[in-house]
Image 1 (cartoon, one colour):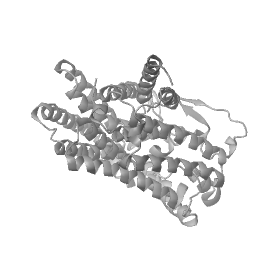
Image 2 (spheres, helix red, strand yellow):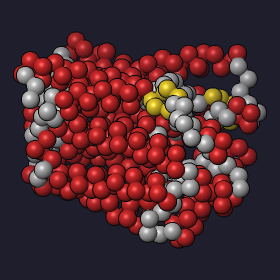
Image 3 (tube, rainbow, N blue to C red):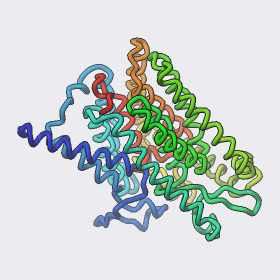
Image 4 (cartoon, rainbow, N blue to C red):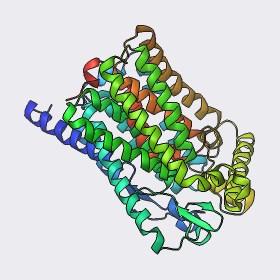
Length: 439
């Protein structure tokens, strides 16, 4: 057993690594892995090649240090709905490991399973650790502001770059012949960045209750920068996510009797300024927005929607052909390209459909068990009216990601999405009030 001094140092290392992980979670920073006997030539999409993200490296450091410190507070996962969640998560991870055996591309399935193990362990660590809610949110904010800065540089450079999406693979919006590059920041895709920004917009108001007034102007400015960046991603799923998640967060705050005058005033200020920013955005980008929603007027958008419908139908066909176990983790694009279409297709932009195709009924049962356990914890807090400010905001963040999952896949397929979901889930699972206090 480690000495108290060593334990303290290990926990400090774990905390620091966790905060770094949260800050760089959305970043497109990864280390390629040259694995022996991995057939990269058989991959239909080049970005599926083996790699480990920077956030996963720091997450592994956090998990290892926390484990060496004796995994404090593990007992919180042994009882009630947290126990059911933990068992379901372990079961889902084991199913994904087993699915390697019936996967077409076993190397890809193995690599994805390793990713999932890291995400699952990170979620359980966050559930047990007592890291400051304020510190974690500030870490997320720092990472998002770095993305915003990079995104604004992209905007400044746009007049100097001719963007041709068919050749570059970049995501743009259209106004006739004019193209506008959607903000990527430091992330791999605007939609993924949008999801992180949506969660950030929901969590940042929690900092107002833990910081002095002198710092609030800076927080308001940061919130507006994050909001402006979210608008410039032109991510429809992220816009819906922040609306849905924000409304749920407000309902939870009201149920917990947390919308007093002290908290409501800065919140109303944020909402009011946010509406002004949205109006300015709409006035300046109205032609692009019209084409973003009236997709039939833009061939590029129409093709994107058509491709999503095709992949959704393929997912249903795959599930019908192999309903019990699915085709294996991370195998949808392999099976779709090799056996159903003969061409490269992207993932299904719907996590429930994608999970059903890859893990079948067994996976669906385990995932439903996870969702039920998370919901049951929320119901317990609702009935007891014991919702404090951070769980209320985290609940809104989780709803935001659930909205995203209906229109995109990155929470299931990428480290950036998987770690974001793991972090929020682990935070939601925290049992005692002291776990949600800020330093």
